[in-house]
Amino acid sequence: MQPESLVVFGPMILFGLCCLVLTLAFIFLIIYLIKKGKDQAWTGIVVAKKFNKSTDMDDNTQDNYYFEVKLDDGKTRKIAVSSKFYNEIAEGDKLKKEKGKLWPTKI
Image (cartoon, rainbow, N blue to C red; front, top):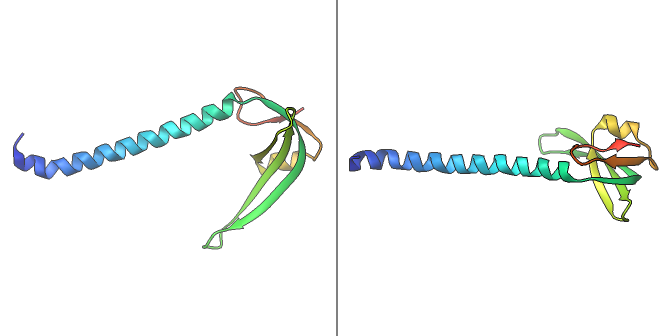
């Protein structure tokens, strides 16, 4: 390889490798978070239904729904849910999150 081509293509190759490393790191993070969520299993009772509306600087609003669930071991956990699931569940309902699934179900 000639020194001139290394001067021209060296920074492009280095930039490409940096982009590849960042992309792979992001993909592995997403896979790790999904696997972590699927590996959890718990049961608990919905003690509170929470809703908040957030607005960004462009006046776009986003509705956020979540439950506070008291687990059988006594701990409390906040769980983000869809609006449909939020409307199906009432306070006092029992939820179960099975290992291998991403979302809890009503039992």
